[in-house]
Image (cartoon, rainbow, N blue to C red; front, top):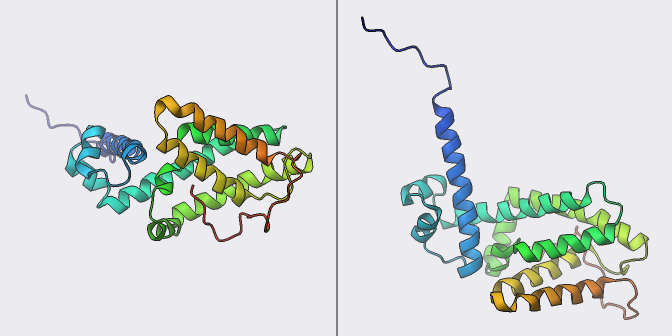
Length: 221
């Protein structure tokens, strides 16, 4: 005797599809980030789909055009910066050491590279995206206590702000992206030169004033 199929629990069937869709989206974003870092933001969408091992239709279902994908890549990159910053600030008793580790890891991982590659007008437009603007503000909130703590301890020069650090970080990340693998040591050497320049023992005053987190952001990350 045949039996009618048991009724499906409400919401049960779509779950695997949602999970698969989320995995596809994350894979596309991660792949696009790598492609943008390696070859610039002009990489064909078809090539990104091929690298991500998804169909072009799947890519466009998640991201209607290149700008939407670029926004997602940049937002994910800033989120990664925040995650790394939180990791360094949690239960931190050595703010200068934490700041140095943060800068080194950002350069090693090339975090913020896609934003560094944008033309100025597009860069400004992307920064106005609510998710990116919020993430950037969160990053400043996490970094400022490290900078303040290092300065209070006399380990970091007092005439430097969070904006200064992020501008320098963007320059180092861009340099890392433009350097071949065999010359990677050069970038890391420059990282240490920059960090050494941020130490408090310098007697050379900086022109102007510190670039703070509240300033109009012209950062490259």
